[in-house]
Image (tube, rainbow, N blue to C red; front, side):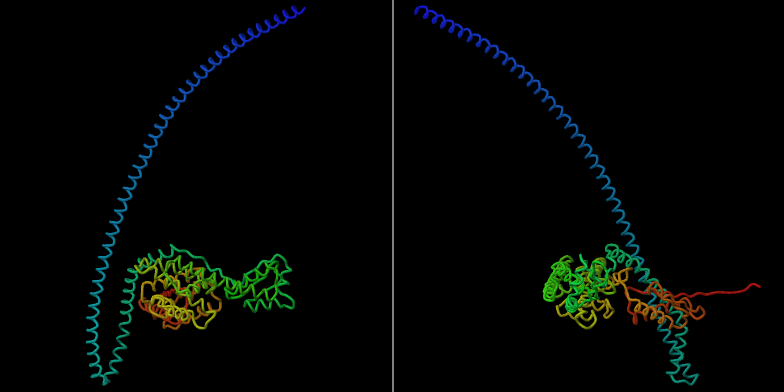
Length: 522
């Protein structure tokens, strides 16, 4: 029994070992198959990778060829453009050179004409001197004859002869004056027109837009009652402290601040805005915010003045003058903001001075300070000219600046190119349409005065001020005044207007002499 069991066990063990060996052999065969399959797949993948690599290399070669072709085309295109521009530039240089040569020829021709005119003037001057001596000799003989023949004294004879000579020569004098005026204008017109055109076209300022009121917006009508306060206490403190009229009416969601003083009006507007924003409206708070706003405005005016001086490049300036420049922003004349006007004059004067060969920086400095006195007129008595000149003298400003302050109102003669540029810029800025507004009463008074001056001359029938007082049209009696005398009348009227009337810009005097012949056919 035991032997049988052992035999069975041994047989089982032998079967297991044989099965294991067989299975192991089978697995080894499968493994070899898998290895072979893997190697086959690897060779396929390797082959595909080589094919792809060759394709990529081919693409790279193609791309490189294509890129080189594009690069060559681009280089050819750029070379063509360069050659074309080079050709155009050469043509422009040739054209410019030709133009410069033409201008030089024109200048030489004009110079020759001027030299010829100078020689003609010298010759005419010598001729006039000869005529004057001849006239004196004849007058002396006439005096002697009149004295001997009429029994008159030498003085009486002299007066008679001079009066008669003046009557005879008036027409000749008028003709000479007219001719020389025409010659001088013809020479000066081109240069003057060029300079004025350059100055006005290179700068264009804003039109006048100053008002007498500011509007403070509010969110609720309740604010109006709080601004007024109990028994009007708050609004009384506000008006007394701010120096403005505060108008609270039926205008919805708005409080109106009224004053002719721009600075006070601006401070009042800012103070009200801060009070409304804070909400605590009572006398102590009003004074606190007012003082704060006033300090801010002082700092802001100095900062604005300093920025203007630096931007214009007019050199260092006294701090007090810088502060006054900033203060000009809150001054107006005839509705034109004083700072805007001064800056406009700065640009115009700088251009004109540069064109005339003057000191551009000095002209700009004089233009910036020419109306500086307007910043002081609300605080001190006297004209803005005197106030401005005094403060500039105090801070050792350049004599050209002082001369410009006086000369732009005709109180001094113009002594330099820079001063002339400032006066011209001031006239251009003030006279352009829309720059200023005048009250009707002063305008009508000036127009009436212009007409009276023209009507006071002998031979004038009618005179009319037109074009808002910029032109006087004078109609003379043709039987009493000839064409040459009309020139003298125009000059005399212009001289009287300059002496007795103040006006911005210039006034044109047009003298019209009309002859009518009337006959009836019956």
